[in-house]
Length: 125
Image (cartoon, rainbow, N blue to C red):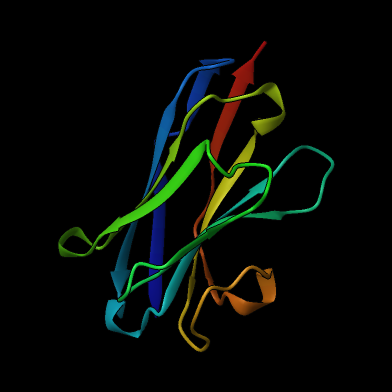
């Protein structure tokens, strides 16, 4: 089993930046793809960014392209989400997810089988 622990959320003004971290533990060798999803109050959880564990290929939701960057540091089994030019509409709980049975750039919740507990990001106007 894979365990995920997110950190780095907080309160920031519009235009500011935050960096989220997700530490992967357990059966890390079974991890193929990692992703970040967000869930705003009263809304469905939605895809933000994804990265393949070995090759580092990435993809993003249109709403964050050019503002957010997903990256990884394999020696520390950590995935990051650098969020720049934050907007009030980015306010949400951000979840880290790992796919161990599927591979490639994955953008759908059902493709991920391990989830973190989430970290709150609040952007004030």
